[in-house]
Image (cartoon, rainbow, N blue to C red; front, side, top):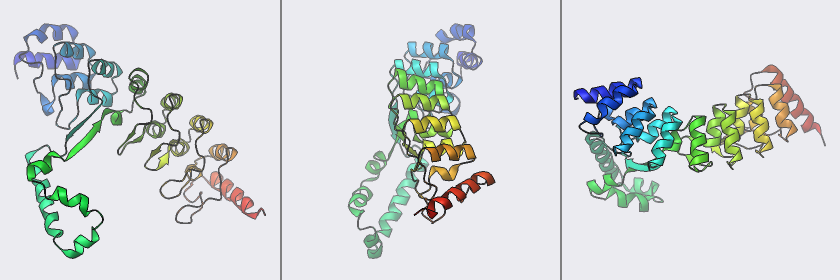
Length: 310
């Protein structure tokens, strides 16, 4: 790396505006690649250096460049929680979502083709074809594609919202750039569930006020499950007031009552119609995994009384 590139890197990391301004005009390229195959804009976004971001954007640095992980500068800024930089990059036209090749290195491409060829061989067996009869009309055309076409179609959809875990960034995205409060990321769950799971009351309140579906899920559990599991009584009240389903069942038919850690949480849910007699998919009572003795005893007693009623 050149002397001036090193000077710019040091200035970005230390937020030394004076040195940055002095060295910047002598850069050979604003799109120079540095450690971890990042661009200078990635570096500035990661360190939250909005002076450097402004200079790079002004010099027409590539705002869509990707690092080795396939992350854009905007995604890096969202992940790092730098709201000012996020705003700046979005105002400059950075895309919230994009697609990248699933196999980016030569080794990954070779392995993908090898595994595809193995599957081709397996499907020559009549037994294997019979097992997959329902999906063969989808699988076979792709398996029979030429290698380059097959690899070109293997893409991954990236959405920067999936990396948002910071309230200030969320506020910018929701209020200034009208990001969908009901965005449900693959593997990251709904925004409401994600911030409830992090016990971020202000974020949950913000999302609820902008129309987030209160029963949006993360791994089949709603935000209410997360609030109950964290024993966050104020958040539980907020979600119940917003209409959360107090008897929502997850993939194992468990209900929010089964995540309670205190008598106060149990009482809140019962006051809003929670049913203590509901059992999960394995016929276990809702208190099966509750560790607090008083909470467990309360649910057992109430459930027993409810079952005795005619």
